[in-house]
Image 1 (cartoon, rainbow, N blue to C red):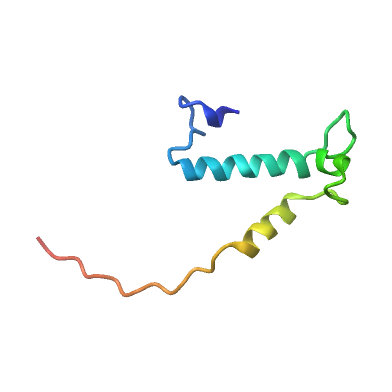
Image 2: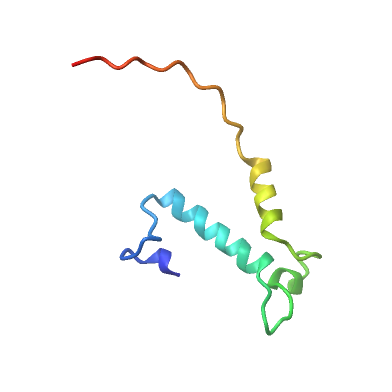
Length: 81
């Protein structure tokens, strides 16, 4: 994965962003990607999941646990210099 090397545009500058991207990749690889040799996903082969997930399913799960944005406060007026 190019995300682990620094000389690329996909490099994560923050460790937290890197952890989230590795988690997304792991879920995609195990629950969404069909493997040629297994003819199914690894999670389905291991009995962890009974259905094939889609990216829509994953996005729906992420949206369900994401915090709702709150109301924004008033803007501060710029001070003229």
